[in-house]
Image 1 (tube, rainbow, N blue to C red):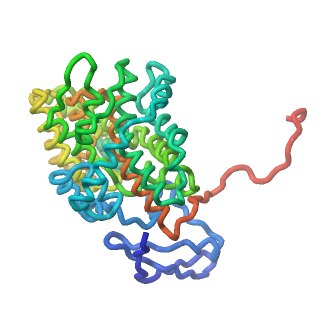
Image 2 (image 1 turned 45 degrees about the vertical axis):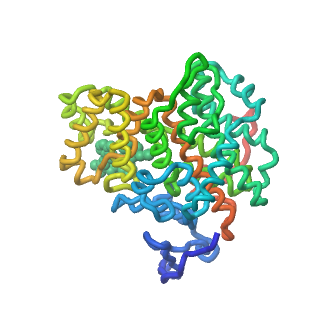
Image 3 (image 1 turned 180 degrees about the vertical axis):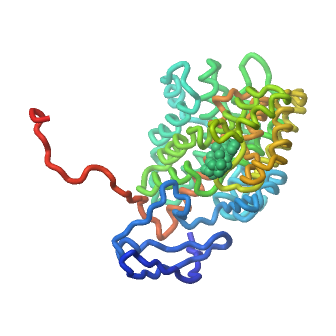
Length: 435
Ligand code: ACO
């Protein structure tokens, strides 16, 4: 990776003892400037304190840019809505990994490479069968992705660019097969093998919903919707799971284990699990006439209830992914015959009322991607336990692109945050008989 940050000035820090420190400042292509504190501890003896990394850029990156105030999300400079409308998930994957949109030959070559890596080693199925019958699909995916490192020894040398590329293709290609098998196992149905003549999304839908006793034809509208959902979730700069993958990878760990760490982090309800919470809330509201009651609860400071699928740490404007998700939701419900679904009516009315309510306007609370994705995935036939698995499948390419970028960054070091220690000071060991 070519270092592109530019020195833009300096910041002065005056300590309580009156000593001054001059810290360099840098600019990226767009977005806020950063203060370089790398030498601060060495020179001043003080750390900075930023739990949750709300003011800390952990790396330089050229993959994804978010402007939360403007409601902008760019992959390699391209707006997410344009990519969702005009591109495909595999083209977007190539873009995220390589920095530029592919030409026709490059896209064909990449598509072929992914398509011809979709099968899992035959012994891998025995691994699935070792899980408890009622295992959560996300638990299976987490374990199975980590287990890839035990099956593909020829692509774990992270210092060899060719092996890194093979590991990346394998991850992107095998993730749908793993995700679909996790689902099939959890519902007690036989595994369905990948088909090379189908697109990435079509193949995934078939592996999830086909059964051996009848033919399965992939619905084109649903396949396109699935592909768009994958595009919308493909990357989101230094979020918790991506930072986890980078941190795991910073020690030189093998790629499959790093992605398993990302899957584990994504599983949490504060990250990948919010769409399930949004769907549960809409189901609980149940009908349009109950909306005022729930809005009052959301605005009551003494009530812990929050409007699920509203608000975002970074977006203080309409989440650009939510707009595409809303359109996709309407397209899906039209073909599944659920356009009059009361849950959709509740969602649309809730959005309309909340967007004109002073509480939500003042606090800049807008629908996020999770507001409509739960309804859409449910209509496509996925149970709620699969929602985060689908997110992990799509985000794998982002994790891989960020992991790869980190390894090629000459300033990369093992990630090792410091702490403010507030535990017991040094004391002598007390013998058991005297405690
Ligand atoms: N409903 C009602 N009030 C809300 C909501 C909400 N969904 N979200 C934030 N607020 C209020 C808070 O109570 C707070 O009010 P106060 O200033 O009077 O104390 C104010 O808005 C600011 O909220 P914070 O919690 O400080 O904002 P933060 O950036 O920490 O939170 C978060 C962002 C966690 C996403 C929050 O908006 C939330 O809980 N939303 C609902 C859950 C959700 O949809 N999560 C998905 C996020 S998207 C994703 O992960 C892909």
